[in-house]
Image 1: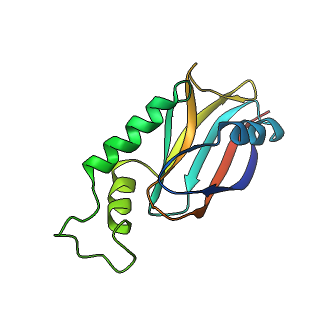
Image 2: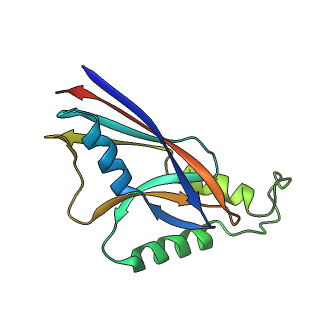
Amino acid sequence: MQQAVDTLTISTEGPGLYEFTQALREFVTSADVATGLLTAFVQHTSCSLLIQENADADVKTDLDGFFRRLVPEGMDWLVHTTEGPDDMPAHIKAALTQTSIGIPVVEGQPVFGTWQGIYLFEHRRRPHRRQVVLHLIGDR
């Protein structure tokens, strides 16, 4: 069994989806693993990971709009407000999505569908530097 681990830093400029498919592909290519499983894990509680369409930017716009409407800022029943009005809604959005994704690796490449890419989904308004741990395990 071969293993490879790396941490990507993804800079965000506010809410939205930030694609990092190419960086993930480069990690897999350099890992010398032909068949295995790649786990991507974001080390934060107010953003998440998504595999989503990467052909039409309107998909990103609509997803961001949907989550803003689903979990708006300013809900008067929220208790956790010390980090600003966008913090608890960000935690809820992260709870509704995922912080870890498994991606198969076949013939040395991550297996994505034709229009799929992987995104960090930032839920906070201010810029952040988010860490995504990549762990690949498999055979040569």
